[in-house]
Length: 273
Image (cartoon, rainbow, N blue to C red):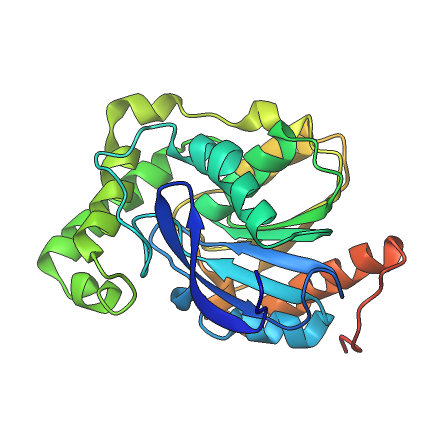
């Protein structure tokens, strides 16, 4: 990428992916690559990338996966292995396209699962750590119930109009995600095997009232990971603590990032306090 502090689209395979980059370029500082949730996009992160950049001094890169935000459409129905494809096929190309040299992956929900699959499936020495917000490693009953309920909200309430602000094809974004998770065969989805191959510190940040997952996800990480697992439960927050309790969540994430970078002799470029 020629221009770093910019927004636009990058070509990844047959897709054009919407992106935004903030702060120093990869050759000048570590980079945080942010992976959005199942209904998210680059824009739906709001000011979280800017605040993390300010708190860590790292460069920050956010992008919308195909079918989300302003990116190219995705073929529907999505494969039930769509997160594996994003992790093992698309993400390596994204990292190559931006000239990624070293840094962390920061993922939310589906994005956290994609980050875990990538780091466990590809031994990439450039990845220094993972910050996972409300990750899924297995499918729980609470996940299926909440995803079924949000379908009714989307079709009968105002969720569709709210999401349309963030997606050029909101129906494709919603049903591509919702239909995959509600497919009965998706109940067998399980990525816990990847956790044992992660060789970098992992942070898990979860709202104590997460309506899409329980503490079982954390227990799985603690059982399967051989690397350190740093857990932060956010009081009063649900599935999106970075929006519902932004200050405490971003303090936790930036603190973890700065400790990891300092441990690699790369330290934060700013005082995170």
